[in-house]
Length: 304
Image (cartoon, rainbow, N blue to C red; front, side, top):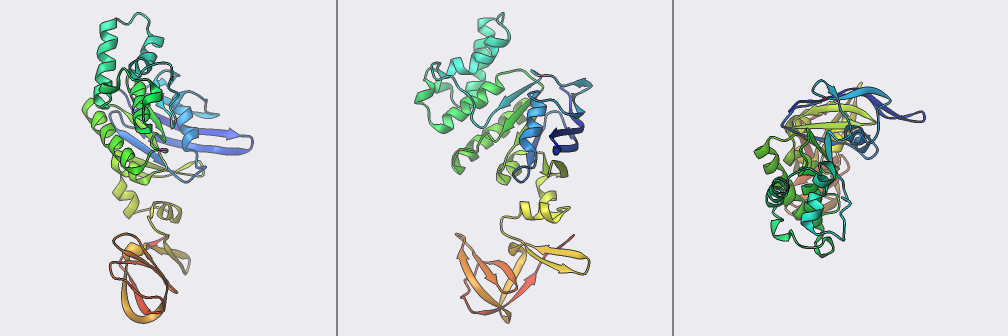
């Protein structure tokens, strides 16, 4: 297996650049998650990697060879499964298309292995119309993984699933990737999925790579205010100080009684309270009342 290289790739739609000089290396045997605000170019990039579109500038290479259609397998947000076929035949379909001379025993072994890895082997003879949403998505993933390719691509595969189902599938995907040493590129709107899955995370903003790193690095050392705002679970506190913009998370803000700030609203988050004041927001384990005077102390401040 070889690394995936994205070299100075741009893609234009009229005068608008959906991708602008994107450079990135996806190490072989790793998971790279691509995240970013809506319209940042995530799906456009994935379509280029899949060979569904061509870059207007730059190249996509796997090792030293230009990537071609068929070098990757793509799992869509809504994988187009065939309702007249059962689960086994849906998963086997790509192998039957690609190589009619594949021995039956080899095909059966490969399909059986993938069904078992995704814990849907007991559903092999069921029709697609008899499956739940989570089971259908596992079939779609299995149909991608059954192929023997260099890179596996995922386009928002958990977008329509509830959090519990998505979490279970993400855990299984990570186990499969690690056990087989596969190369995944995983596009998602979910920061939680990216953090749980990826060896490296790419943040796309306005069609450009804004930052690449591990989850902890991105959260603790964001390069820009846009990245900090995108990765924060709550709205950042922001202020101008000279030529710099300072920002800090409500979670990194200590709240004490007495002071110049006045509590404007209190929202229960489940185990903590989000307290909005006249001088910013804080997350507190203690409940405060609207109208109370408080002091906000920042534990960690980003400067941009």
